[in-house]
Amino acid sequence: MQSEEYANIKMLYENGRTIRDIAREYNMSYSKVRRILLASGTQFRGKVPDDLKSKVIELAKGGVSANKISKELRLNPNTVLRILKKSALSRPRKKLKKEEIERIKEMYLNGYSIYRIAKEFNISTNLVVYHLKKTNAYKKT
Image 1 (cartoon, rainbow, N blue to C red):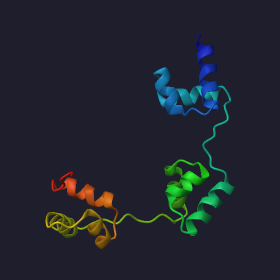
Image 2: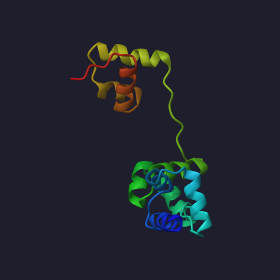
Image 3: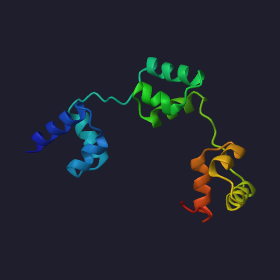
Image 4: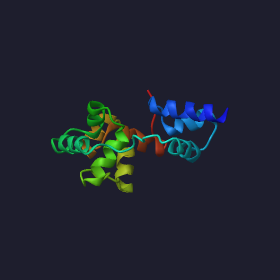
């Protein structure tokens, strides 16, 4: 029974399932599934080949967004961001000051559109809505 289960775990992993998915399905911990795979001599697929890393870096230097890179190369967006961070190409997140957040709220309450506020602060509309919700000022229309 147990060896059959282990063979199924190995087969699932080799067919593209993640260790986390398999652990959930078999009600096991991540580390237990990983140990089973190690013991069965499974080749892990975790490493991103150097040529693919180079392609990610090249596209990023060309101005392509991490999201577009991940879709084009069929990589997890977090993998792309990790590669860019290690290559010192990731953009630091812009933190808004309390005064800026208050100004966003004030502008919204005075009738400015979310788009116009985003444009003025050079941030995404999603970030504007996030801060408006956080300050309980957002009214869904």
